[in-house]
Image 1 (cartoon, rainbow, N blue to C red):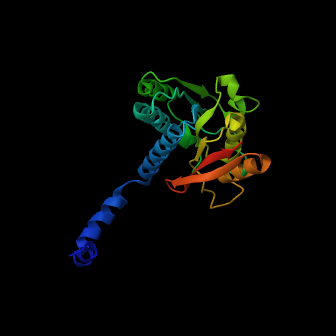
Image 2 (cartoon, rainbow, N blue to C red):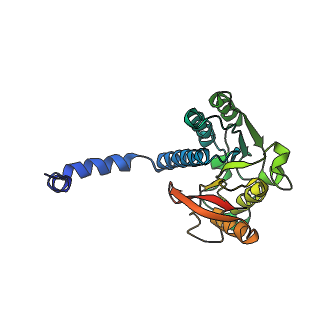
Image 3 (cartoon, rainbow, N blue to C red):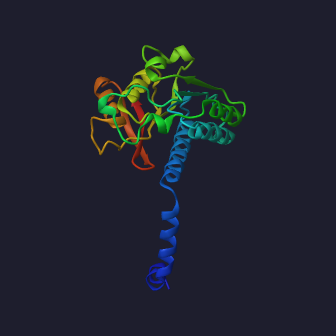
Length: 236
């Protein structure tokens, strides 16, 4: 008896599986998807010897930032030491002043304001000796009119953009432009939101960035999570 025959005969199996999948919280799905995406990006860049920094815009609780350091430790065991350092940017107090075009019911200061001291303590614990730097502040203070070199960033290996809104995403992309290289992978964690509006959110910011920088070429690398996207830089 093949699998399809079994499923047709014993309907309780599909009921059991569907109940189990439905019981998994969507935010857990999102987190696992993000972990897998970071793992892929770190593996691909290590495989192609795309050296440089891991940069994360939007740390929140530090979950993905910590995972990036952990998976780098694992990958270095079979690809060798990459001398990857880690940079994280966040206000830890939400978004600050939000433009009307960026208003969204799920992206609120009350949701994204966190216990900074607790998070920084946990990041230090998870770093296990790896080099990292956390830059605290709103992006119009830490990114606008700043250069990556101001923080010691020379080249970008992987960039995680978890900015949610269009304006901070634009600031993150423009800040990162000078350290992009062939092989840099950029992860957009909130790429599909704003009901698919092509001029809003991370999608809208990336669209404008590409239009303003036609010398930069990108290839879609993979999809992850709930409509998140990864792109690899092919020309600079």
